[in-house]
Length: 142
Image (cartoon, helix red, strand yellow):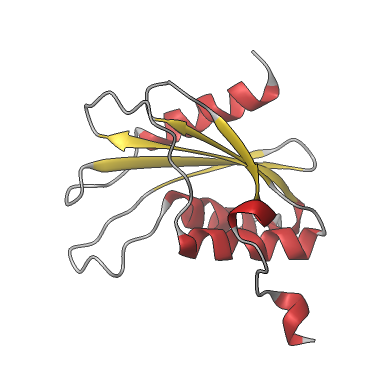
C-alpha cells in the first residue's frame, strides 16, 4: 500500500468516529505533516446545524493545537452515507478549502488533497490551488 492509500485508509478509520446524527453523512480526514506524522478528524454535527464542524476543520484544529499547522503537506478526505456504499469521492466544502488554504500559505506549499468515498471507489487527487483558485489568505493581510 502506498503512502496515499495509507492516508486514505486512516481517514476512513477516522470517519468511523463521525458524529452525524442529523445528516447521516460521515466524513473523515487525515493530514500528513512534513515530518510524516498523521493527524485525523471526523465531522461533528450539532443540533443547531450551523455550529457543526467538518472533519477537515477538526483535523486542522488538532494539528494547530500540536504546533503542526504550517507542517501539513497533504490531506485525505473521505465520506459517505453512514451504513451506505459511499464510493463517490468527497471533496472539501468551501469553508474547509479556505481553512486548508491557511495551512498552505503558512507552510509555503500547495497541498495535495486526496478525495475518496467512505467505502472505496474512485480516488481523485487535486492541488488546493485548483480547488480554491485566487484564494485569500495570510499574505493578503500584510
